[in-house]
Amino acid sequence: MSQDQVYTKDILPGGLRVITAPMPSTRSVTVMLMAAVGSRYETRQISGIAHFMEHMFFKGAEKYPDAMAVASAIDGVGGVFNAFTSEEKVAYYVKLTSGKTETAYDVLSDMLHRSKFDPVEIDKERGVIVEELRMYNDDPMSRIQMAFKSHFFGDQPLGWDVGGTEQVVNSVTREDFIHFRDLHYTARNCVLSVAGDITRARALELAQSYFSFDGHDKITPPPYVPQPGARSVLIKKDTEQGHFILGFPIPGEEEAIQPTLKILSVIMGGSMSSRLFHEIREKRGLAYYISSGRRVFTDTGAFMIAAGVNVDKLGDAVACVMEELAKAADKGFTAEELTRGRENIKGKLDLSMEDSMTQANLYASREAIYGKIKTAEQMVEELDSVTLDQLNAAASICFDATKVKMAALGPYKDLEQFDKKLEG
Image (tube, rainbow, N blue to C red):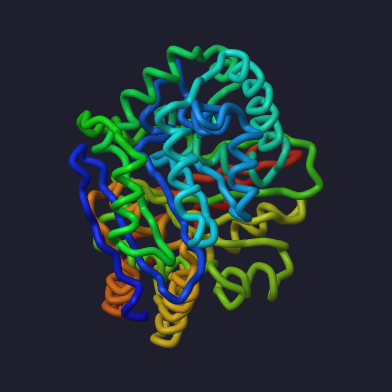
């Protein structure tokens, strides 16, 4: 990692944290405002409002009165802009050439401080979001991800769809939006992260000129509570491909085991040279796609394996995956696999840090959610410290067949035939 990829953290008088990551070698700047709020902070009555509000911030404010004005301001300088909502964070960003940086501050501050939440625009956007929900529901790969999340984390905010439900989308009011914004979009709950061709002094000067959040205290989301339930869930859908996701419980993001689990994920199904890709696809021809990954939150998470298979081969594929996981837990890995998995992550991290958007997002996410930043260099140090014994122990702990949960999707009557395959 190059020495110019460092950051500074400043706190404005009102409490807003400003992270600046100068990147003199690039000509772009990414300005990102992130709030530590998401679907995890919602109740059933307003489930999906964080995502809905993300849409509404682009629908017009004081200086830029409608969506066209917002888009024209950024398009007119060749920039790109977007936003995203997850369970624990919402972010809004503009990436543009460094000579036009002030435009990003101007647009974002107008959106976030002075949005109108016009009832007419709210009603129009209801239809847009309902169609977004239906689009994902129609897509098998998206549908099974949502079904697995609901099944694994249960009937609590972490298990709910980030987009909410059609019922809630059609019922939330302007007053709901304003209350949610005033509660969560506060100085102590937000981070302004700026990365690219910009100095610390300039980033702070613009931040002080454009942003003035109040100083309400940070809101804590409800804790995750493990819930008992069936081992498997089936989504009956007339598809030509069967899909399944297997999941095992893992600790939260800050736990010491996470760097080891990152490497474990790459070795098992994170690349075309991974064990599952080679065994399930290349050797046995059971799946087109198969991958592993972590879905991690502050206090819990899931280690997941997902695959799409011939509808008649889903049981065989599940059995084969469980066999490979049992083999990993029992016999462990080689030093060469550890090295390859570690270097895969480090190489991709190094390449990604060339992008101002990646740096802005990395620093904002860490600061907004955990209150402390972990640099790429620190991540590499953590990866380098993982030993073969730790990797083998992680596999043994993680791949416990008694704790696995499964979601399956396809034209099946029931899951009885597949449940038996989960014994490993």
